[in-house]
Image: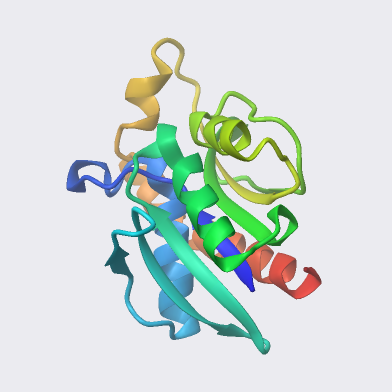
Length: 177
């Protein structure tokens, strides 16, 4: 079984924000793949759905613990389903990459991302893959208000093509794992 963790924040006010790029990608993929709608699972503090891709069981989760506590949900799901860290893919925003850039990272540090930082803190293992969606802009100053801010009109117009590219990269990653 593969586990896809989409990083984001659960309140409606965060739904269309840059920091919820992982959730946006998960929603798109789940819809395209024909998985059932996400359902709340209190045992894991997450919205979850599952299905099969190329004969492989895939569990997709959106933690409800808020970004900075994402590691708790990852630990609960990985332990319950006996999923190795190597079989986990995290979908995340990336403030260090230009807007629209999609990158795959196989393992490593947190790069300043608090959701990744918490997963690393809880798991003490960096072997999980990441699909990173660049959100960087030319803004300086308070990054929290930027990442928790809504996409600009220009960014929203480009978002479908960016999510398509991110889905393609995720599917390539799933085919390799």
